[in-house]
Length: 256
Length: 331
Image 1 (spheres, rainbow over the protein chains, first blue to last red):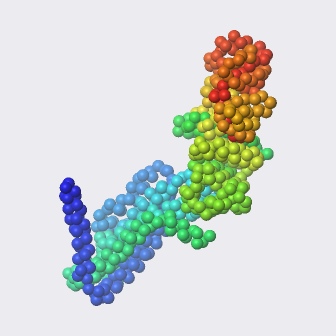
Image 2: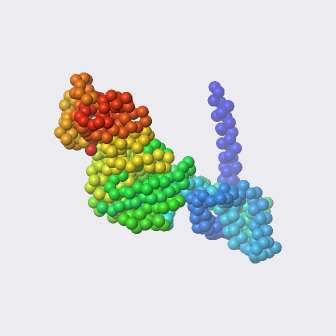
């Protein structure tokens, strides 16, 4: 009998979490998906996020590897610095980016309110999530395997690509999925640093905010789209985490 | 045969590792855990930078040479096989596979992952991989520690044959003196980063440099051929016969600790089945005990009995020990 309150609490929690998502789809009309606001926002979101994530992967991966494999004075300070944007309120991130790259900022650039600014804002907010996860993934690779690779005639570069990267792959994939989800939902820093100009800087979340008091149904359609994309991401993330090794095995056996 | 020379000094956490050691055939480093044994191998492989000195092969210094350019075959303690690669890919990682899979009887495992293998199989893969490199030097870190007692003796036998056939300068590390004596031509005792003594196994038992070496490296190892019976009968190389309660067949080593052996001037008829007659050789004091060489074995007796028996003057004596006090290891 003691189980009843526990089950009740679980049911209330689940209903509470599911209701807004169900509501978005219950009132969704597909006709609004073809509105130019929606298609423009989808294009801006996908384009800016793709570019931002490419930079995050290209620069974040070596950064994470250096931080995971080297011990130097001040290392924990550097790691904390990398992690800081994760806990920073988005508005602070926005004002910080303006103070750094704005016309009156430290670097005097004309970056703000361009599509590039969206990329910068997304990379600044989402990148650290990937880097932090990647550090953990690299730290999880057995040092003995790295040493073994070296004694077997492989230099640091070959060791990285043939041993470290394949073994850290699951963690890196999970980190990238998290960063992508965070980047796709980016709102505060983007609206302050890049504005909300349709077809240029207006991403999906910004469009939801811009439309909800103009045309509630368009806002709903945008919301539905975001839920769908996020759900696909979440499923991909779980699949990556559970099957990274076996997926790798297939890739290998078909190539050999 | 090539000659590897270790002559370096490395500051470790608790002490300084400092040693000079030429390696021409198989040298085993033994010592308690935390004595710096693995660090020695890491310095030779180039994974650990010595503070002073270094390693050279046939007079060519390896200082500043990165691990991937030292031709060293390193078999790690837990074998360090790449978990994401098949057995074949693990071996091929280091160089051409050639007939290595056949030689190490792992052809049928070529497509298996390391986690699907038994301890003995993993060790064979690790050895094949280390040799695929075409190494000039072989390093083995606790090659038998990851195996259960049952597979261990068989694997030790195979490893011994392999090392003899390869004829490479080999440095192996073990905490088990018996393994060291069975596998190596020379044994070095490493304590707190310093080599206490380096000598052939029999020499180490006969003339330990101090009490620690004496207690750590205890065992006599007598080589012979075993025949099964009610007790196993072993014919030693010099024709003497020894009985053991252990099971064995073919080429074996009879392990007996010096403190299991007693010395008499006359042939006594007691329950000790094994009697070896021999000339009294070296007599070495170790603390309050004395180590006496009689024929092929070394016994440990108290200082007062050594004096009573007049061992210092040499002559003939009888070493006796029970069949239950022996152990057989395959060689």
